[in-house]
Length: 353
Image (cartoon, rainbow, N blue to C red; front, side, top):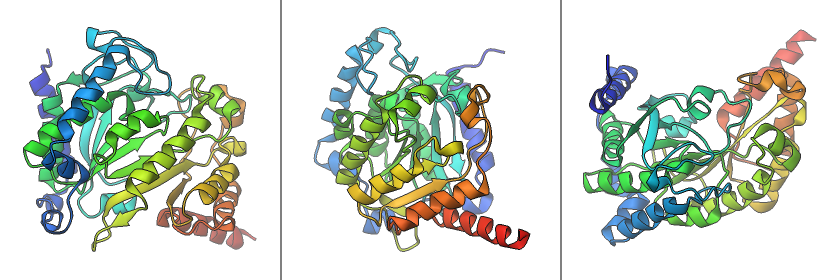
């Protein structure tokens, strides 16, 4: 049976409805209207959002959105490393309850998974989406409708997963959705492989940056991230720009995030991610109260089996070591679940003795 664009959108919305628990379907709290305004709404009120949309779309004529700067004319249908032309492709859209606690709240994070990626890590757990490009192309007006749908289900934010290569589409969809009443925070959930020049187009648009800081060494980045040896350099500059724009992680009276930077770092086997260098860099270049999530979820996936150093999961000892480094350099705002996992491992080790 042929699947039309309309039926595809309906399927996504149906999936979102199934995932949103009935008790969580209340409309977004009026506190956003009464006490807080998203950045894009402020820009829109000043007439400054539309020029950003125009400027971003023009970049697609010789694409340089990400550090790979392929230079292809995506408006003419050409595709570079990210394998995406001018239309946005999405895999799924639904309320997500597995993100950081302050993003999830009670009603979930309105997560939109974009197809394809500008990194294509060999260990990617979402490889069918990022490497194979599973999903379907939709219009920017459809993307705006998905954002409004997420708000309607009660989601606390719009969580844009792997957004870098479709940033112009996101800007236009945000403008359309704002005109129709969107008023919840935008979360830019990125690998961190960004160009500062492009991030400046998002200044005042994005409320919450959720970047990864995957590798601290160029050699590792080149091996595990499709030749992106410049990743450590680019991600450091990107995080400094993100912090300049939105500052520290900030929540409302109910503990739900409304603004700020939230950094993720995945601990990997045999110290290949450079975790000690990561925490030292954060402590030296950002406030020690910066929100940091040191993640333990690494597992062998996709092509990781082909690389000896990452052919296994991490050990409890490796994770305890990583958290110890973070505390030793003085990081004070570690993700509560990270702390809980570390405490569980420590207790388990004591009980085994």
